Length: 405
Image (cartoon, rainbow, N blue to C red; front, side, top):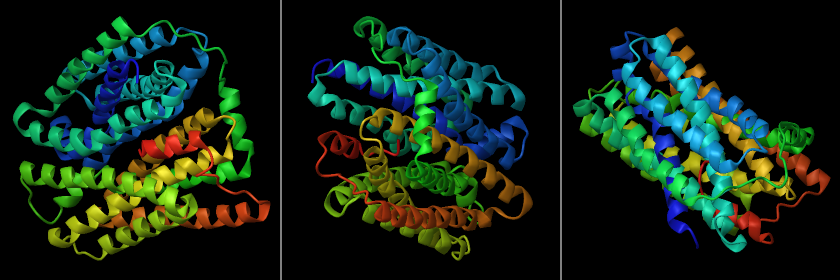
């Protein structure tokens, strides 16, 4: 793959931006204490990032479609770096919230543009691999970024983590500046074109499934640190260890989901993943907070959630085979909407009831996603749609990327 080191640099950028997005979940209690706010209020820092990425990114992509992709990517990376450093100088919750919005907008747009740029830097036959490499960088932020950041927060301070990640982003920024040529899109993908695919009932149901199963995940994962510590006092090392195992399980789930989607088909894998996700969340509500019961259930839950992702993305691509990029772009926005809704619901649960009820809230959202899947596939069967996951080489490339994006 030509320019592979540039693609790896873009994957590093996406890894760092993913770490910035999700690190709050690992240090939520520390952030809340430092800012003098409640845990549920601190959770809005996750919501703000996700909403900014979901709403702002497609608008940025559409309005700048005729602008050199290299220039836009350099601009978004620069804004992301500055906003990450700004965290260190954000004394109030309000300023921190504004910083997170800027991070979500710049980071979300940079992630989408990085995938587009990566496909232009390699031969056509290697474009699927390039996208897969970028998305692995994102999933790796869960596996490595969050647990390592959680562990380092105790010694370096949580604000310093943002500065370090921001400065590390200078590496891919320099790679883009030196190695990425000028890239002008030949075909404009407008916001209207992106939204037009939502006229299809099956596409609407598909993105709603994304919204609710990611929402069920986010409702708990946003508050995973206080949830794990609600009945057991965990050291930073123990907490980061559990988060590391959770990240590994998410990566394993993506691998399992990709293989199962090829072997058994995306529908079977989606059913299996959503059923297991809902089941483990329900069991978590009956675990009484016992860490020895909670930990293995968290591991199973992570596997279940992320085995759904590659299969569902593959299915979404089959619905719009002529414009897979647009389909995945819309689905990505709904992933971010899911994070925002889930973290918001989780915050309401903590404020109004008990943190122990987060599993129940996640179960309700995952169950809704499962029911929507049953509705979609029944409707799909009636209309004669067949998911062609084995026959389309382009679709297989997306399945091989095996990432939640």
